[in-house]
Length: 166
Image 1 (cartoon, rainbow, N blue to C red):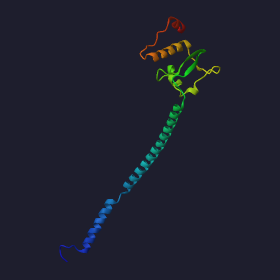
Image 2 (image 1 turned 90 degrees about the horizontal axis):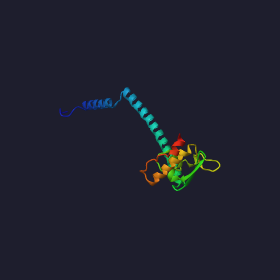
Image 3 (image 1 turned 120 degrees about the vertical axis):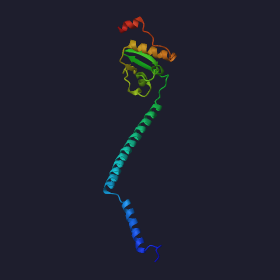
Image 4 (image 1 turned 90 degrees about the vertical axis):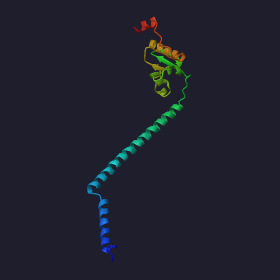
């Protein structure tokens, strides 16, 4: 046997040593395994929460799509004539006038979305509003003027209207 060629037992010992080192390097300690399991549990729980939230969001999207479909099917038109009973006094106007100012209670009431839930006068079927008819008349006049010009300021009350308020 020459000096250049290692003895078979030495080669086997080196291979065993190398395998032992690799095994030790690949072997995880009990703490590492415990930590890994804890992470898997935590990620599993978070994944379940995310899946639940995803299902809830999907349900909400379906509900919103349903509402959008209802709004599309609502047969409202800006030219619809709306009759109002304001504390016993009758007013007639168009839906466009009542919805002239965005983001208001009147716009919400008469946009068509809540049409079936507004309070109505049982005798006439007119929408009932429990408020001062003199003030409502001013509001309605202002909304009508908005349709003519968006720069039109709120009209000043007349002396008679001021007297009614006092």
